Length: 205
Image: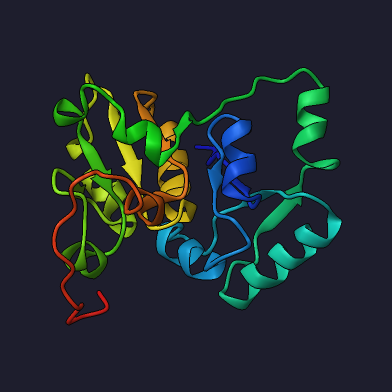
């Protein structure tokens, strides 16, 4: 039998740029933060063939170097001209719906809307939105069944980087019934939404 390897489209652009438009089924892990760590956490197969989407040639080269440092040597190519070339070719584009923390605070049905916090357990234990559910980003693939399929939900992390990774994974798995909070918990804390009392973290997990 012939083995068909499907390349993973890894979009290394910033979360805000990715949200506005991306190639369907691509995963967003932005270069501007813990890129290599999250690649290692979320792409378990070092032999995975990867197609890169980046802002420019310099970012492509940076991504290839940073991938190879953690053992990913199967970057089989990149999108010439970046995402704009995809748009210019008239190809299908997907987006991630986003709202501000203020818009979240003004949601009339917020008490009925599941809010999923993808920060680490320790961050969540330290302080979180009172109604939020914690599904850390590194557990997302094992806990997909906990995301509502027939109900609108809200996604956030600390600042927006990790929740966009989560959003791209959820989109790839067929979820389209959610919004991502711009600026994450850092912005949510500035609203009048109820949060738990701050507790100094006892662990970094």
